[in-house]
Structures are given as structure tokens and as C-alpha cells.
Image 1 (cartoon, rainbow, N blue to C red):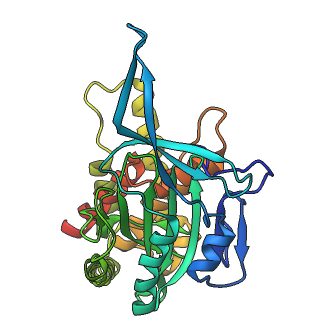
Image 2: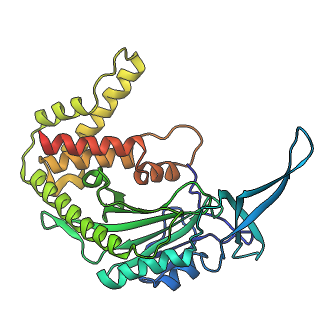
Image 3: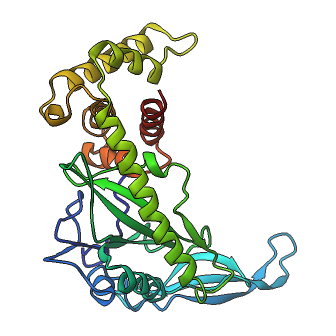
Length: 334
């Protein structure tokens, strides 16, 4: 997957980050936390004036007669660089436009109430999707030394294909990997449909924010248990054999690739410097799995290595995310 960050006609990118640049190296990096207004301006999300424009009449290709379509509308924005109108999608009459400013204003209330700060924001797929992330104020600590930050990632679409969604995500700062295992049931997710309004949803959002902390604390508690539970090399091998079973009817190449995966995991568990403080524990076993998936698994073809690995680390529906969730559950319940 390419980064999908919007690149405007003048070569600038629709992305901004606080403190640390994005993996793609695009956009603006602020020296510190941003306000909602800062984020909108720096990520070029301000002043889009997203609106619905009636489609009006279309011509029937069979009869050549005009057909009035009062049920259909185009979603249009003003390009922040060129100032020209641009089509983002096609929607029905019940669809309610949500401005980028409304999204950040909604989130700003959560920031004011919780102490969270805006961290990143950007435009994807030529403005059809936008995202904003907030970093919550206090990190969780596993074993007193392994830091896990919590983020709220908010997504809104202007193409008519989705709702405004906020999902809670714990992230290990040391390697910026998104860890989803504790949130696999999406209990901290809340959604606002584009057929309604944002008003009245603050209480729900605050509940979701509290739920984020409960699940973050649950993640830390489970991680502490994994850290306190020894695991020897033989037990680790049993775990990886369950995590990566031999597929039915697997051919020689598939068997060889599986064997290579298991050897890589064993090396990470037994010898990787990143495992030193947590060696021979179930937490080390989980981290061996995530380190291999995010940094060691091969990238085939001509696609950019960094882009592919970022996709694997960040997308909830990617196969690697499912493996991480399965690994965490196996280790937590065994």
C-alpha cells in the first residue's frame, strides 16, 4: 500500500505530526503538541467548505431523455491549495456533511476534558478520507520500564462510504508499533453516522474515552501477567507451533516458509537485544511475534519496503494484526 497521503498541486502534502515525523517523511512536523487550529492549518485540512451539490438532470443513455435526480448529490470541497471545487463522492439526500473543523471541534472537547493532545492529522485518497489522532496524557507502564502510549484515532469520510469513527489504540513508543491485542473486540470504538449530527455525542465520546483507559489498563494488567510468567525455549516452540500450524495439504514451499518463520521467532526469543529486559517470559514471546511481523517478515515485489511494513503495522484488518491478536490470546489464556 502506498502512503495515500494527499499530495497537492504545489507538491505539498496533507499531513502534520507533532514532534516526530511520519514514517513516510511527508508533510509538516510541529515542534510540539498542536491545537485543533494548528493541526487543521498544518495538515491543510482547514477551509475545505465541504458541501452537497445537486446532481440535477442526467440523460438516459437508452432514450436520450432527461431524467431529474432530486435524490442524488455530489460531495464537493474547495481544494485548499488551488481554491478550485473538487468532487469527493456521491451521496443521497439524507447524507449530512461533516466539516473537518467539526471533527476537530468535537475532539477538542475531549482534549479539554482529558488532557489529551493532538498528535497527527492528514488527508487520504485525495481528500475522500481524513484522520486525526490524539495522544492521551499518561502512558501505561509494563513492568515499570516498557512504555505503552494510548491514542485515539479519529477517521471521517467525505465520499459517502463511511461514518465518523474513533478507535482507541495502544502504541509501544520504542518502535512505534500499534498494539491492538487488548482492543481486538473494538469495545472502545464509537461511531457517528453521516445521516445525523455531532451534537449530543460528547457524553458518548467521553464514555468511550473512559473506556479507553479501562481497556488500556486491562492491556497493561494482562501484559504484566505475561511478563511475570516464565516461558522456556521448549514452551516457546510449542506456542509458535500452535500459532503457525501446518496448513492442510501444504506444499513443500509453504512448509519451508513456515519453518523459516519458526526459526526467526526462536532467534528473536533467545537472542534479540530488544528482548534482554524481558527474556524468557510470555511477554517476550509476544514481543518476538510482533517484532518479526513488523520488522523482519519479507517484502516481495517492487513495492516500497517502508510502506508495506507501515501497512502491516497500522491496518487493523491486515493478516499481521490478526496474528498479533491470536498470539496475545494464546499467551494470555494458556
